[in-house]
Amino acid sequence: MNIALVEYGAGNLPSVERALKGLGVESRRASTPEALVGCDALILPGVGHFGALMRSLGERSLVAPLREAVSRGTPLLGICLGLQAMFATSDEAPGDAGLDLFPQKVSALPPVDRLPHMGWNQLRRTRPSKLLEGVPKDAYFYFAHTYAALDAGEAAVAFCDHCASFVAVLEQGNVFATQFHPEKSGPVGAQILSNFVRHASGKR
Amino acid sequence: MSLAHRIIPCLDTDGERVVKGVNFVNLRDAGDPAALAARYNIEGADELVVLDIAASRDHRPTFLETIRRVAAELAIPLTAGGGVANVDEGRAILRAGADKLTVNTAAIRNPALLTELAAEFGSQAVVLAIDAKRVGDRWEAFVRGGSVPTGMDAVAWARQGVDCGAGEILITSMDKDGTRSGFDCPLTAAISRAVSVPVIASGGADTPETFLEVFGEGRADAALAASIFHDSIQGLGALKQFLGERGISVRQSG
Image 1: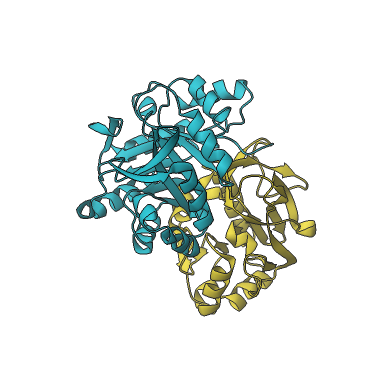
Image 2: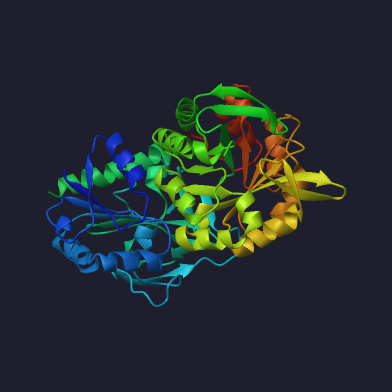
């Protein structure tokens, strides 16, 4: 199993690497277009700013190769800002285009409750999910964000409610993403990563 | 379904070992940070804070190594800080494995530091730590490990800090710290009402009832404690069960 973590100068790669290692899965870092080719699965971790992430991917010429890998059927898991990057645009950086795997946009959560949405919250499942297989319905996951996708059409499989209802887990074909951090979500987070790895290895 | 109230063990370190004092003085050794981190990760801590309370420049490499050792034990978020004075020092702490960093003294000297850190790492990674002490009818912010008064009103400073970019407030009551006499609920509630970001209450943790109070009248989003956990006076699982049974949303499993 050859898993590549997309490295673009930010993000919390070590914690994702550690979480994978805990599952007995070795990963490597990919920061060039060539490195995105020939892997069995890709993970796009993310922390920080939508515009900064997209510009970093752009500077490394990774935007088109990422989209091509997805078209080839390579399983991709986006985490937190990595989920947001899959959309067309974000309120956080109106001038910057996202990866546009989903046509909707990322919005600022309305400030009706405390923001950032910081801490452990539960999910509301709306469709069957591969990532959530074996995960208890009332499980808590760790979130840390102020922006979120309110809609992802049929790709949304679970929502979370804080300030608004927003997409917490999305799955469509070989594309997977979580707004929360599975690598920071204890045993249930490890289960999510394990489900992704298992699904990705089945795809080989 | 709602956001859970967080229980956060705190490791005050001299850079290398966990230490604990009363009212910010009389420090004593309380163990190995990585060993404690591993224990709290399994017992169901929602997050861990590790602070360098010595915060001397000479010890910084030691503290970064401590962060690495602690982070390696965790599948939960880690916040670290102590003496962070600029963006480069903040980056070093995050690169070492922390998800968030705390700033205190340097932010009071230069509030723009909060703006710079938020621009670089996002507000969600910037925790403004405030050490406050009751002075007359208000709370005053102190710096340098609680040794130097600033003349600033702690509540007003919290509000300003959030305007500058802080994504969370860690409010420590110097009057309560290490006393095991309950959290400072009036202080925490005043901060909580003044800001829109999450508030972590610190100082005075004791029985499960004291946590119930700080999540109720104290309006805290998270509560931090050290000695009651280090000394196994209070178990995390039992504490969360107590709170859950009284209607406080908490993450029950480990």
